[in-house]
Length: 125
Image (cartoon, rainbow, N blue to C red):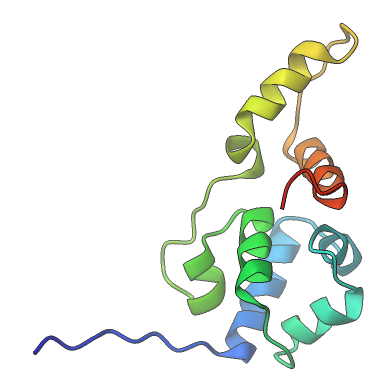
């Protein structure tokens, strides 16, 4: 019988990784809370290991921060994930071509802001 490799979730370790990833992505707690439709205190609770996210919030956090879900939740070594620029390439291409004929070069930060707006409007989840 094959042994299953069960990974354990630790709120404290998740919180440390979340804080590290948030800082690396240059998000404030307020900015990140806004993206995931939570308040700043919830992000603080996550980072301090006092609360754990739902699966949907954890997925949104990992996509927003550009790390894999498994890295954020379990600390798996494969930290890489698609960036917001890669994930929403068609949207970025459309915006770059159609913004009133103006020259627009999308940056990671501008894409984060666009995605925040689309999430807030319910266009993206």
